[in-house]
Image (cartoon, rainbow, N blue to C red; front, side):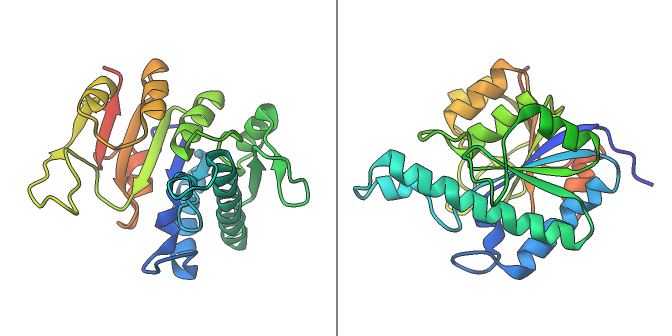
Amino acid sequence: MSVPQFKRILLKLSGEALMGDQSFGISPQMIQYVADEVCSIAELGVQTAVVVGGGNIFRGIAASSYGMDRASADHMGMLATVINSVALQDALEKKEVQTRVQTAISMHEVAEPYILRRAVRHLEKGRVVIFAAGTGSPYFTTDTAAVLRAQEIHAEILLKATKVDGLYDSDPAVNKDAEFVKKITYMEALERQLRVMDMTAISLAMDNKLPLVVFSLNEKGNIKKVVCGEDVGSRINSD
């Protein structure tokens, strides 16, 4: 049996990851796949928190680029993350995994408000907690929200599941000669402007010495492998 190396983790999922082969929205097959992957670590007794982006539905920063007020656009993006979070909650609960969605924007009929102590209590009871609506403030990405929530709940590691198998020195989809980066410090990632996360998120993780693993979501079992200490993807540390 696989033995987890971490007691409490935070998993960051992009909204785009939920699209699957679609160009927009939520793929039913992909949401089931993600639920299976999350379920695989919850069954190991790992306290699991999740932050989901909203880029498959609406990207605030993109909307602001064509004239929409940035604060309004970001609030719309936050609502998109709530849609994704409720969809993931539904998929997990169909697999009999107790799940709670907590939102940074109050919407009591849809989900709980974000309350740190309540979130920690849910985790201690073995429930998966999905943090929605980012930080609740415009101008902050869900990457920054993920680092912030990971720090608040004292997660031991932040797992960032992406479309690629780790960190590269340039975009592998554009540059076929892009070099894979196995290990790097946060400072090096900032200096080289590697787009693993936005600068605010990287700086916050660096200041709090939060380790980060970047890996491919599309390879089945990867989340469980990372949690069990296998050498998967790229790792970013403070030193």
